[in-house]
Image 1 (cartoon, one colour):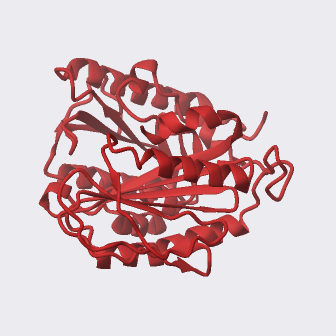
Image 2 (cartoon, rainbow, N blue to C red):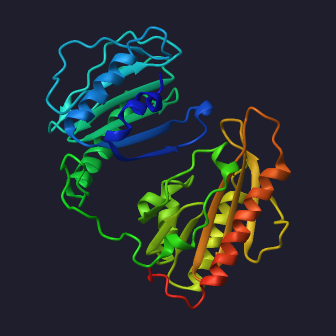
Image 3 (cartoon, rainbow, N blue to C red):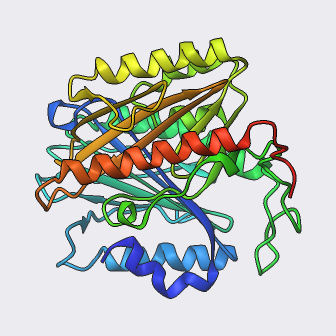
Length: 346
């Protein structure tokens, strides 16, 4: 049973959530993929029930994962650590996940030939799940990651001005408008065909650190964002990055274009619609699916967009290209139409 199936019975209590992931290289060559899931429910009790249900379904011997028994854990209130080993290999040592400040867990395990390691816990009305995939996801890496990342995540949640849930958990009755400049309105929506072959992100206004986590080299990209004076980022069918000037946007556009060109798995192709300052690339991603990457510059804006086809079918490059170029053309026309308009107006 997957987490999505488990949540169907909890839809009325699911307030919000997000999934974010990253990789440090090709996982087949010793790299590691990390997926973080944060789900907010109506109350701490519901979050705890979801954690317990998730634990129970993972005890099912027919599930692709199986639970590794752990003795003498501190099952403190509000925390429900879960750990299992993946499809491949054996785990002889027992796992322990102590709790930092009774808020964030630190895994402490010895791993041998494990493909996937999953840990989950709750904090207030939030349910957290982190999944590590890759043979080099060893004790040192996982412990270091959790020690650095999750206390910061918990701190951010504790300090956030969250909207109250239906059970009254949260800080404000109504959250402020995050898109004061109206940037999100400029991003076109995904087409229905896109939704069949890729995970479509929720429309969002992002800060720089959130945005760079979606690029292959977050550290270098963040440095370029800083140099370009990036202040606003919004994502729907495209990610729009607002820089300090047209010259700054041109430099950022070149940086992203060079990154795709030097990727080694992508080849550049000429946009069939001949859009100005637009470059597209195509290749096969790590999951064997055909993918397209396009970037565009318009004034002080830089745009990034991704299209992913199905790995289970013969990739129809023409159709995939058509969808991407239509999206980029729509983006260009939206920019043209928005010139001189007040985007903050309702």
